[in-house]
Each structure stands twice: as structure tokens, then as C-alpha cells.
Image: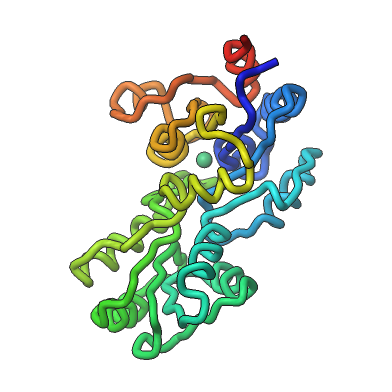
Length: 264
Ligand SMILES: [Mg+2]
């Protein structure tokens, strides 16, 4: 028996790194399942939907239900459907995100003078004209959202600019911050996760490799948090950070030790 009812797991840097399953990840997932926890995978990747992660993990022999996967793209599309369902979105972001938004029944427009709201996200073809058009929309005082705050993202070559870098450019020209950034660690993201899990935050464990998103989400929501050192965070980062996880694990493979500690 364990005191935990549910777990929210990050994906990149926690379960997989690039094309590889992280050693111990399958054991960790098995330990959570054996302990009877409901498990939700939550990626801040704004260019992928749930099906991508189901298929990617199936390729590693790990079965997950797409209904138990959230991404910052799916959280953003759910939030926009609930709050701006009939409105037109000016998107500074990638085609895959546009397809996810449109697949959720939302309308995306290329015309910044016709938009009702603005969404910023990673765009690996970002250029001056994109920023100029976004400024036209932002100058109209439209609601302004970001998909996720990640300023950099890990790649096979090292580190690349992420959504946070694009949002910083948009903020600089508009002279204002986004009204909300919807991925981890936002309150919107925490509510989306708890709605899926149907568990109590005080009995939910969050495991991820980033302090400023994974651990921050859990700490804010009153969950138990664990950082894994299999991704972006090093021991030196941990010492320098004001964000403290409850547990530090070398990898997800050690998650069973937390479940046993939560035993009563
Ligand atoms: Mg990660």
C-alpha cells in the first residue's frame, strides 16, 4: 500500500531522451502501475498531441493510453476551446500546433487585423515578418497566450531556443507579458492534470527533469515532487535553485523508493 493515488510524469528527460528510453524508466512505470497509481504523462512540447507520445512509447514497448497523455498543445487547445471557442487565433507557432488547434475545432487566421486573440509558441522558422505581424495583432490589445514557458529545449545537438524565447521577442515588441502561459507550471495545467487523474493533489506525485516547470507545477499545487537527474537538471542546478523538490532521483527507476516511503 502507498499513500499516493496518482502520478504526473514528464516525458522528455524523464522517460525518453531523444530516440532512447532512459534506463530504468520502464521499471519505474511498472512500479507505479503495481502500486495502483493512476498515471498521466505530461509533456510541455507544444507541437505534439497525445497520439504522438502513445506511438513513440509503444515503439519502446511501453503501453500508454492516449487519454492519459497531456501536452502543452492539448492543454492550450482545451483552454482556448473553453474560453475563446468561437474566436479567431493569430498564431506565431508551428504548423503542427496549428493542426492540433484546428483539429480541436478552433479557427486560426493568418490575418493579424482579423484575429481575436494571439498565441505564441516555438517556431523553428521564426523570422522578422512573423514578429512584425504578431505586433500588429498585439497592438490591438487582444488576449495574448503562450503555450509553455520553456526558453530552451534539449536537442540531440545540445540546446535550442524554445517557446519562451519567442514569447520574449513578442513581449519586447508589444511591451506586455502574455495574459497566461498555459503549459506546466501554470494553474491551468495543474487543473487539467487533476481533472484527468481524478485524484487529490496532496496524494499526487510529480516526477520530472525540470525544476522550473515539473517541480514548480507540483509545488504550487500542493503535490509531492521529485526531480530526476536523467535530463536537464544537474546537482549544481539543484543547489543554485530556489525551487526545491521533495525528492531527488537519479532516474525514474528509483521511484519505487518514494512509494515505499509513503507507505503507512
Ligand atoms: Mg522534461
